[in-house]
Image (cartoon, rainbow, N blue to C red; front, side, top):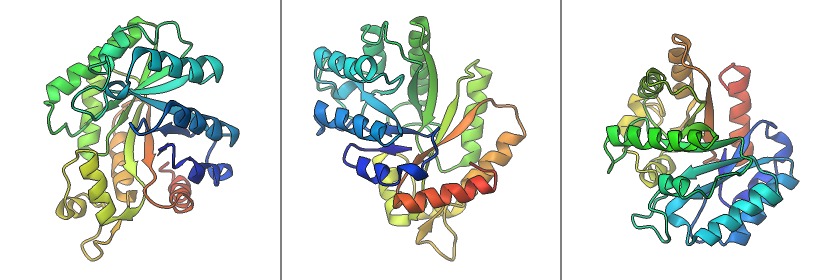
Amino acid sequence: METTSRGVPRFTAVAEDIPQDVMVNIAYIGADALSDRLQAVDELRSAGLTPRPIVSARRVKSAGELDQFLHEIVVRRGLRRIFLVGGDPLEPVGPFEGALALIEAGHLDGLPLDAVGLPAYPEGHPVIAQDQLDGHLLGKMRALEERGFATDITTQICLNPLAVVGWIRRLREQGIHVPVRIGIPSPTDVESMLRFCRLCRVEADVDALVRYGWTAKHDTDKVDPSHFVQVLLEALGTDNLGEVHLHLFPMSPLPQTLAWLGAEAEKGRA
């Protein structure tokens, strides 16, 4: 699942209802100070949850700030997983052009991390060609593996479940067999879904939501990911495509999100 620093109280309030094996990504927002990010980590851990901080390379202001943050979360607090992204800013605010530059600069070297998460875009990116996306992902994975780090992948949201399966199949054919987490929103309304898609640079409109079963023709006010998950699992079941999980963006109140997740688990879908 995923939160911002400000959204952490939503998680701690229902911590006992969140499965223990769920990781909670903490977004790296430019307005957050180092203290905000560390407080978010501490509050989640105190509630018995497992935080996975996101490091946004182009948002890092200095190498010293990065090293301090990594020391605090990995060395002092004992976290063993981070999620590394390039970040949204078109121009970096500090010394790192992107995630690969951060890796190659050696700032992760020697840290006792179990895995470094990386993002992916099954349906492409509005300003980056698919072959470039594939090349960037492979380059980051190789750079991390050369340094002894395991990796896993979390995808951006994608409306078409069959496109996701085709993308996973292509990964496996390229010899990439790391765990993959498929990003999906929790149940929400159409307006919020389309706004989130724009924020994530994912092309979407009401027709697409209807076409892929996110919303019904007779009720275009509600968005429900259940159909996406069902089709995804059915398609995955026909191939041996390795370890695949869900990454849930909680766009509805957390009790409602967890109720949906519990219902899907009872159906054997989550």
